[in-house]
Length: 381
Image (cartoon, rainbow, N blue to C red; front, side):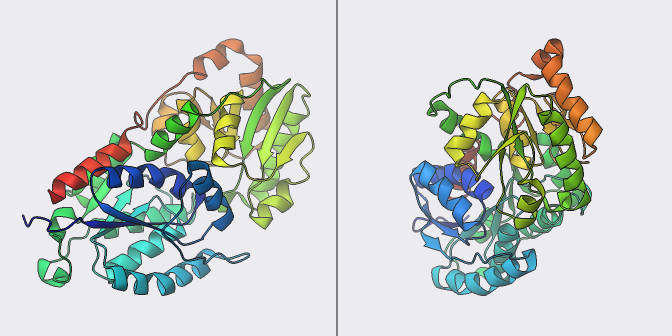
């Protein structure tokens, strides 16, 4: 294998709050083992991403500033596929890293593939096995994994000074189950079960987050934002949450997502304490003080169990079955009666709550970023 004659350049492209949270530990680890690393923000969720960077005291090297009001997935895809190729052509990174299943991740993967630059996919292999749940995330992650599995012939990569075949086809799975999904779909390939880098960020932030004064009533942290939840499902969720709030002995803390459709559906929810989106340190503090969590978020399905918080998932399927298998996470759908019943079970049955309010770590021990950096360093050594 060809040796690296210079510090290999790895570029990370991100655009949303979860991507920033989960890729900042990777960026730190890559620099720690000697890589040249640059971070590009597309601006898909400009304000939310800025909160994360401020919380960690760091900033992207390049901000494409592509966010527009009421943008659709197709519009952000088109904007990134227009803005990113000139940057890739000028900087010619040896590898491009993306995270998860966002429009930014898919567009960056396509742009890198067209430029002949290998892609590393962090949080690869998640599957709900339904392209419409969640949408467009399931389709995005399947497409990204397919492209990240591709190996270019060396002759196509003469412009790169790194042995491309040594670092192509990297997919970093958060769990053995995610790796098994990749093996079924693509057979042999370069897959590392690294754990979830979001747990790295969570544990680091929790360790330096001062505790909040205990709320006077038991607090339920609620987040709702998925596109497939809009419309009738969102109305049903709102009704279910209203029934929970009507108990009078709980506080629903509901940070509103910026999506105007979400705000229209939930901003008038009776009995809830509605706030603007929380910064990452504030969200970690809110999880720590919560009795339990009700959400349609993928990230909270990973994070809250590590903090010992039961999670009720407002979806019909999840691509994170490992958390469900622990018993701490339960998928409950959108039915108002079931939402009220499942929340009531956790609030009223002390034995049930105790069984489910325990820290579990199906997504790793907080060292995923170090494993990713070490694997890439070994491949290029």
